[in-house]
Length: 186
Image 1: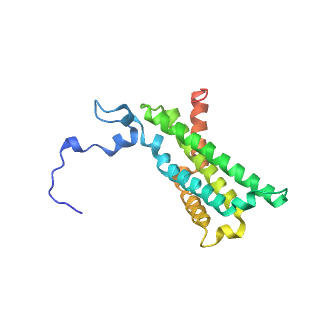
Image 2: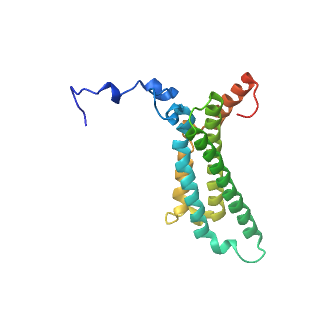
Image 3: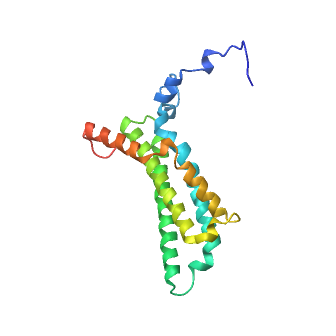
C-alpha cells in the first residue's frame, strides 16, 4: 500500500542511524540501546538452529533402526556422525543464547557487539556442519525427495551463506578490536 500526503507524527518516527547505533529516544527501555549489529545475526542464525533441530529429528526418524543393534562398523560411523552433529547443535544453541542474554540485558559494549557477530557466525558454521553430518549419516536415502532431511539440508546450507553469518569477517573484526584494546574476554 502506498500513501500520499499523509502526516507521520514525529513521535512515530526516528532516524535510521539511531536504530543501527542503538540510540533510542529518552526514557526508552534499556534493550532499545542495543546496536542492531549486536542482534542482527540472531535473526539469521536462530532459524538455522530450528532447522538443524528439525534435521536432527528427521535423521533419527530416517536412521533410528540403523543406529541401534550389534557391532557394525557402518553403524559405528553413523553413531559418530549423529552424536557429533547433536553436540554441534547444542554448542551453537549455547552461543546464540549468550548473544540473546547479553542483548536482553541492555546497553551492549562494542566488544560485546563484535563478539555477538562472531558467535552468530560460528554458531551458523556449527549448524551447517551438524546438518551435513546428518545428511552424510543417512546416505543417499536422506537425499530422496520424500526425505525431510534433504529439505532441511538445503535450507540450512542456503541460510548459512548470508553475509551476516560469514565467520572470517566477524572473527577478524572481533580479534582486531581485542588486539587494539588489549583486553581479556569480552
